[in-house]
Length: 263
Ligand SMILES: [Zn+2]
Ligand SMILES: [Zn+2]
Image (cartoon, rainbow, N blue to C red; front, side, top):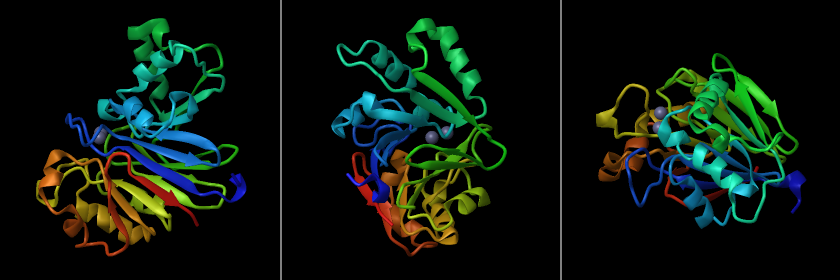
């Protein structure tokens, strides 16, 4: 594969929420960029969906958490435990886990409960905290990541990943309407945006289809994917609600859907 000019392959692993569903697993997105496989959130069920996407936990080099709600982080402990007791295969490369400020404290508390069951051999687990009060960034060999604070939890951040060919994918995580997301997503090839509840059921801390559409329109993204659907979303015409504010390319996420992003 020509890594220099390659784009980004997005696989929706979970388009749902905390509500148990056979159709919509909890929040998680797989991103393949520059030869690396990254996870964005890992709600319960993520490892099974990864298998369905023909990806092993050992292929994952980075996990980026938008925030610590269980429907976004629930599979972290099982994933580390599976890494330790994998029945054959071993992790050789470091797993980097990144999130907003508070990650070290969060992981420290998991360790208080699970002890050495969530410890990997020295050097195999790298925890990175990003600023949750202002824009921040990280550079890796084949891709770069920018983050911005979101309006949901204290630690909530969204991510913008830019691949070797310059194409960008933005992952909102959970958020209410915020200019920070519009700024972060400016001109991106793809915005994967939460749209938790239909317009008439709007709650604080989350977006609706028409609000997500407003953000997509203002940031002039090339394509919008709506995800993080509570079951109520499957009772209404989500696309029509989004069309009140956005007329660009629109995709409603389904589990295991793949989207190729090239510049
Ligand atoms: Zn949340
Ligand atoms: Zn959520």
